[in-house]
Image 1 (cartoon, rainbow, N blue to C red):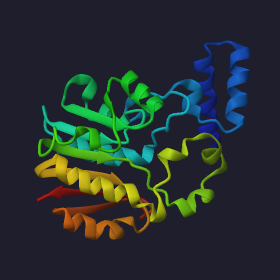
Image 2: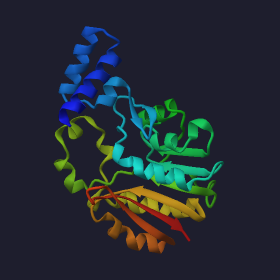
Image 3: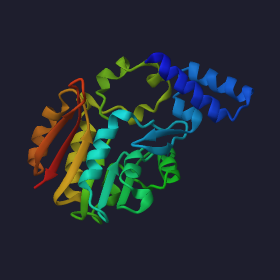
Length: 241
């Protein structure tokens, strides 16, 4: 599998270099230094959609695709959705924002991320989670998604060297236990969502258990903890009562 991945990366770098050997050499050097492939080629694929990725912006992961697909299943045509910490905007794109399937608002604090999301056709608003959307959208949203930072601060040093060297730590650091922003997302989503609306959050480890009191306290039920094929927790899906 490693050889196949290397061959695929080489093909992407060659295509991005447009046949120029000097450019290809520079691209290879950047990749060898650990820079994300998407920063070099300027794009990646997420849920079958091409996503523009600017240097310095968190690169969408394939592990987030099941959350996006479930969100699309729950969002009706013409609905309203909010994607917290949208980054490059892969979730709104997967939800059909480019095709007018629904209104999907992406929020982020990082100007580079907002510019990248806008380049992907996302309605991107500078906001600390949902704060800039309140009270205007209170009770009027059908779906809230979030790939908010959830890596525990105390575990950041264990991340792969390339991630620590190149990717924005602000998109990863979830504070003590990794649940600081997750708990805020639960509280703010409860204000945004209409009764019966859905909240889908990416998380890991035992964070679903840690969020249980906050979810119950804010009126969320029908909780599903989604795991990958290895049995690892990847996300949490629930509905507002």
